[in-house]
Image (cartoon, rainbow, N blue to C red; front, top):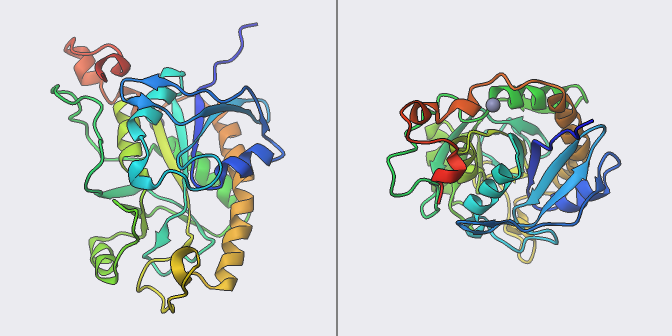
Length: 292
Ligand SMILES: [Zn+2]
C-alpha cells in the first residue's frame, strides 16, 4: 500500500518544539532537515507522528528558546519549504497579547481576520511579476478554523471563536497609544508573527489557520507596574502566568485532535485555488515555480 503523504504542518511559536516533541501523541520522527529555498534556508523541519497520521513541524523562533526574533524570521523560506515538502494545510500557533479585555491571558482564540501593521518584511513570493492579486475575504482557512475551534471547545478550554489579530513589526512591544489605536481599528489581539506567514501560505495555495493563546494583556489594557528583569517586564501577574502555563500544556492535545480530524477530512475549501485565475490564463502552473 502506498504510504499516505504528509500534507499537514504545524508552525510553532516559542516553546512549541519542547511541548510537541515530548507530548504523548507525538514522538519525534526523522531528523531535522533544512530546506534550501530561493529565499535562503528554512528553519529546521521535523516530521512528528500523531495518532494515525504524520505532520511536519517547524519552529519559528528556533528549537531551543527565542533565538530568532519575529522580524528576523525567514517567513518566505519557511512557507516555501513546507509547500515543497507537499504540505497542504498549516496550523500556526502563536501567543499574542490581548487588546480585547475579554480575552484573558490563558484563553484560546481562533482569529478570523488580520490587520497588517508590519513595516519591513518580505511578504510576497512573486516580486517582479504581476502575480499575487488575491482576494482576502477569509484570510484564515474556514475549514481549518472550524476543526481547530472544535478541538479547543470539546476539551472545555476557555475559548473565543473569532477575533482580529493585528501584526506589528517588533521586536519591541507596543506603546499604550498604539494599543489604543489598534483597539479603535477593531483589533482584539496583537502579535508579531502571523504576518506575512498567513498571506504567503495563501500565495502558495495552502490552508492556514492559527491557534492563539492569549499570553498577556497588551500595554494599557490592564494596569501593571514595570518589573525589571522579567519577561514582559511585569505585564503578567503570577495568577495569569499560571493560567497561561496551564493552557500551554493543553496545546499539544488540541493540535493533535485538530490534526487528527483534518487528516481524515477532504479539503473542500477554496484556499487551493487562490492562484487559479493565473493558471487559467496560462501564467502559472505551480506557485513554487513562479516564486523565485
Ligand atoms: Zn483551506
